[in-house]
Every structure is written in structure tokens, then in C-alpha cells.
Length: 429
Image 1 (cartoon, rainbow, N blue to C red):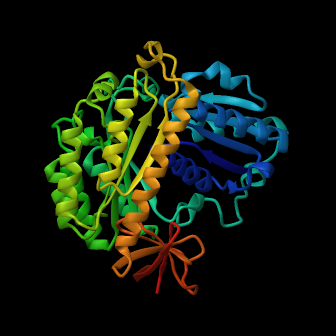
Image 2 (image 1 turned 180 degrees about the vertical axis):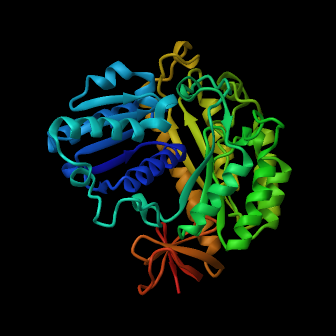
């Protein structure tokens, strides 16, 4: 069987899709482009209306280009609107997020049923005997050099704009011991960077018995990483969850990347309150300023939403003023769109679409200035980087993507010196 996996959205989805690929390869299935695959798994996002639309367009395109493809759809859009997804062309199964861990098992069971009906043997179908059956993972799987490891899923935060708690469920954490075993397995397969991720990663361990904290996981995982010379990267943390203990661990450990992603969402306390975000702009500004003082070379990214219901010119000016002078290094800008079923969807004083687009462009321009300022500050600095793609790019611990001279393979540690920056492109000597 030839398969293809298409992934939308967050790193949790990326981690889930890597799991699909591992299981399929272990069963002897072979990766393929969507236009020639027997089965296409589409792992969807539903954080915005644009994400839903992107998934629909992709499914229709796959069905058009590969009419024989059987399309299996999972993820947050599939969970939120299963009937809508099931009606799309060539979709043979819609898998809820709660059932997602069993997706490949369901798929292979259906495959065996099909084989029985057609009297075709498993070896003919899955390619047993060609050396692929029983294979597991290695760097480069799904085009990724780093391995994304899900430590937690689910969210109980009541953010007014977000549909994800209803599609991902309540927080559930993977015990530390299980994660350490998984890290050892991933290291044994040859991966040199592991990104720890979760839907609400900062809540890690609160649901376990006895309860633990994210800092406990990082402390134990960093010992394993140090022993194997592996880099741990922490994915997005809510500002209220980025504790002093976490910051100190990142500062003190060479095997935890100096890279933070801390969603701000807005710089107006009035808008933050309407969004049901449990912090103020002063709290956030103090947090990131403290990180910059403690770890001067750290990358600090953020998310902002523009055009939230009731956002006025003064609110947006507060956001623009903060971004302009902040120590952030990159910003993802999300134009607000209603998500049916959220509190924000029924709020009054909606911002006109044209004004949302204008504000989004202004915020993106500010974000580009912040990135360029950070890149300029890194010229002349030395870093350790991991080669990616064809070996002519490397990613540093503080999340710089650097063009390097050819001659390297993917997944090598190298020392780089940033020699120049031009229009978002960093070069190393």
C-alpha cells in the first residue's frame, strides 16, 4: 500500500502525523505523493475559518488529481464538523481526535478486510520481503529532521475565541517515565533534536497523580539529552505557564534550546479581558523582558490576534506600540474570524473585515521589523546548528535558519558563524 500524510496546523498535529508514518512504515506501507497514493490521511486544523477552507480545498484537489485515492480525515476540523468532512469527495473515513491514536490500526484492519475479499495476500499488498516491513523511523521521515514528541493534549482554558478545547478535550499528560523511554527510542533512531509539544503544554503534569510540572519533565529530559548530545526544543507556552523554573532551566542547560514561543494575543488589557486571557500586558512585558535579560541571545516568538470584537483604534495602537519596542523576535499575526460555538462568535461590535486586514498587515510589517532587527544583532555570533533539508541549511538553538556552504548531509551538528543578513536570509561562513 502506498500512503501519503498531509498535515495542517500545530506541532501536536505534526507529532500525531509522525506517529501515523511510523506505524504505516512498520506495517510495510510505502510513502508516496498524494497524487499516486492508495490512501491519503489528511490531519486537519480548525483554529480559523481559513484552516477549515484549506483542508477542504486540499481534499478536493487530492480527489481530483487521484480519483482512486481513499481519503481518511482526522484532526480538529474533522472532529468539529464530521458530517461536513464526510461529504467531501473520496473521503472514506472521518476519525475523531479521541480515536486518532487508533487511526492506523483501523486503516490496516480495513485493508486486511479488503485483501480477504480480493484474495490478494498481505505480502503483495504491503510489500513484505522487500526490506520495508518492520522499519521504524529515521531523520528525514515526513521531511523533518527534528522529531516532534507530544507530551500532552487537551486544554481547559476558556479563551473566548478558541474552539480547540471542544475538539481536543480536557488536558491529558503522558507520564514522565513514558516520555523518557520515548526520547531514548527516538535518539536511538538517529534524531538529534526533539521538540516537546502539547495543546496546552504549560499545563503538563497537573492531571497526573502525583502531580508534576513542566519544569520536572524538562529537568529529567535534559539529563537524557545531555547524555546523548541531543537538543530539546520547547514548543508554545502560555505566558502564565512560563515559570521562573522553566526559564532558569533553559538558561542553564546547553541541551534545551534558547527558544520561547509565548502567545501574547493582544497588548490592550481591555481586549485581553474580553478574550479571557488570564494576564495583563504588564505581566507579559515583564516576562519577556526578564527572559531577554537572562538569555540575551534567545529567540522569543509570539502570536497576536487583530480585529477581535470590540477592538478599537486605541486598542490596536497599544498593540502596535508594544510590538514596535518589544524584545520579541518574530510574530505570527492572526486576523480574527468567528468560530461557531465560541463566546467571541456571539459578541457584538465586530470589526469590519477591511479594517481587520489593514491592521493585520500593519502588525505583520512590525513583526518583520522585529525579525530583521534580531537577525542583524546575530551577525558575527557563533552557534551550534543542525543541518536540515539537503544539508545547505542549518537551524541553531535560538531558531535561526542559516544558509551554509554545501558539502554537508542532513542531521549533522556543525558550528556556524553568522556572516551576513540580507532581507531575512542569514548566511554563515
